Structure formats: C-alpha cells, structure tokens
Image 1: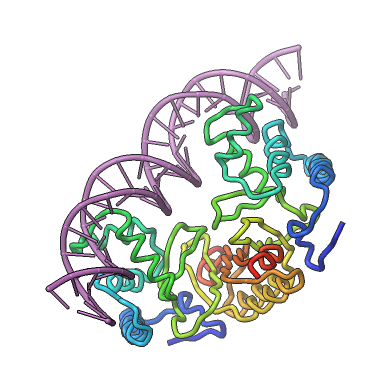
Image 2 (image 1 turned 180 degrees about the horizontal axis):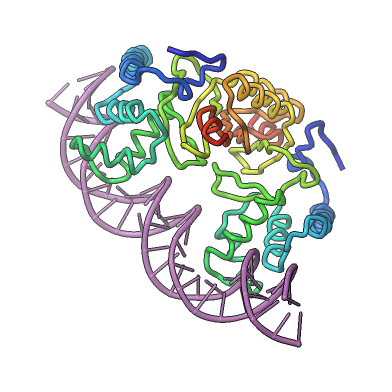
Length: 164
Length: 164
DNA sequence: CCAGACTTGTTATAGTATCACATGTTATAT
DNA sequence: ATATAACATGTGATACTATAACAAGTCTGG
C-alpha cells in the first residue's frame, strides 16, 4: 500500500475492505474501553461511512440505514452521527454538509481536511503543525481553544494530472 | 485602543463607528482599483456586516436589507454575500451558518476564526503560520490548496474571567 | 423488581440555500 | 447614438439541512 508522509490515505490506492474492517474492530475495542454504547444503529452508521469511504450527507446515511431496517426519519441519522463525532469515530465537514469516518481514531486530534474540488475526495490528516500554530496564535490573545477543524479546498494529485 | 499581537480586534474594545467607516472607505477604493461593481445592495450588505460587528446569518442580513427597501427574498442576500466573500470583503463561517466582514481586507489571506462558545463573538486573524503549516502538509502529498479556512471554538478571554 | 438514565422511533417544523425566469442596468463596440 | 452582450436585481417556488418534542422501548444499578 502506498504511503505518504502526512497520512492522507484517501489520495492513495488501498484496500477499502481491509481498512474498513480494521476501523470497525478498533471502534469495538474503544467502545468497550470507554464504556460507550456502540449500538447497532451507531455501529452500522460508522460502517456506512467507512464503506462509502467518502464524505456522506446525513440524508445519504439515513437512506442506507432505512434500507437496513432502521428508522427513516432524519433524527435517526443525525443522532447516530452526532454520537460518532462526539466520541471521535467520525468528523463533520461543514463545507460539504457531510460526515466522514475518522482516519486516525486512535488518538485525539484536530482534523485537517483536504477537499478536492474536482473529484470531491476528502483526505484527513492529523495536522499537528497546524494545531501548534493555532494554539500559539490563540495564546497570544488569551483564547482557550476547545476544538477546531480546518477545511482546505483545492486539487488532489490525481485531478492535477488530468488537468494538465 | 488596546491591541493584541495577532490582531484579534474582536476581543478588544474599540470604536466600531470608526472601523466601520474606514472599512467601507477602503472597500470603495478597492472596488475602483479592481473595477468591481460595489452596487448599493452589495455596499449596504457590507455595511450591515460591519455595523453588526459580529457574524450574521443570511436571513438576518436579508431582513435588514428589506428594511432599506431592497428585495426581501433569500437570493438577494445570498448573492450580495457571495460577491463580498468572492472578493475578500467578507468571510463565511460554516460552523455558524453565518457571514462576517473581513477584518484584514487589505491583503489576501486564509482566515482563521476564533469563536467563543459562550458569548459567540468571532475574532479573525490572518493566521500566516497556520497557512504555512497547511501548505507544507499539502505539498507532502501533492495537494494544491486553493482556499482554506479554520474555525476554532473555545472561550474568549472575557468569558474565561467570568467563568472563574 | 424498580427507578432513572439512556436510546430509538415518529411527527412536525424550523432554518439554510439554490433554481429558474423575468426585468432592468451597465459597459463596449460598432 | 444604438445595438448587443454581460452583468445585476427582483420574485416565486422549491430543495436541502437540521432540530424540537414527545412516546415507547431498553439497559443498568440499587
């Protein structure tokens, strides 16, 4: 599997089935450790995000959940997604009104997203340097940062090649 | 007027009327220089954002525009706001579904917002260090950044004091 | 077993954003 | 000066996103 320094997995070819399964197993463990209730809807929601392997709107998720016999009203999806975000299994991408499975659930982090404006693929990095820069700026005027996320829009490597 | 290193004006007391007037004058100049059509609706929209001196939803802006005799349908506000954002006079804050006048319109920049979760005040900084960190990460896997913005949520200095 | 906290389902509704078309305005080139 | 193209505005309709509120079921600890 090709790698890149920042861990932007989305821009590399890899076996989705494998990473999906691993992520789910990891979530199961984490849920036990933290005494979280990763119920069927919630687990299935995470699975849906992982399988899609791209950002999904709440209504996309809802549709898939309904197909599996869960409720088909918006709160069903929003609640499950909220739970996943709250506990670090997923992130919300405001610019896209969408949600995506977290690619680094093993450690707390402030996500940095790179969104390709051409193919809409979203890559997530842990963005440690970015976080440090923000904390530094915040400190300079006494702001206490709770959570943050950064959304960058541009062209992914693949789409750049095609544009040439 | 108190200053702070990162230029987070929102967290300092200052004379709104003065900075509003200055920003509008600056916008007028810029519009002439760049041959932009800062029409009455657009100019008034910017003025509304500046006067409010906080992030406003599109429908808040629309309401004020309607009071001044402009159209009262959503596209009126969205189009004016889109123009302002497009040309750097304002920014969009996705997390709040809101818009705010740009505090550093004199130079192109990628905005970094600090949003107080208690009093909802939004401060904008130019975030140069942040931008550099992001560009660096992007380069490492060949992503070409077009635009970006960062939204950090937390507690502003004033609200921290009150919490103690 | 019971009480309380949490989870899910459902109805209804609120809030945000865009489409499409008609009309009017501005800039440019003949 | 006028025709034309590009841009701007007004308006109605509608699509998309998100939450409130309540009822019913489920898990947990005393």
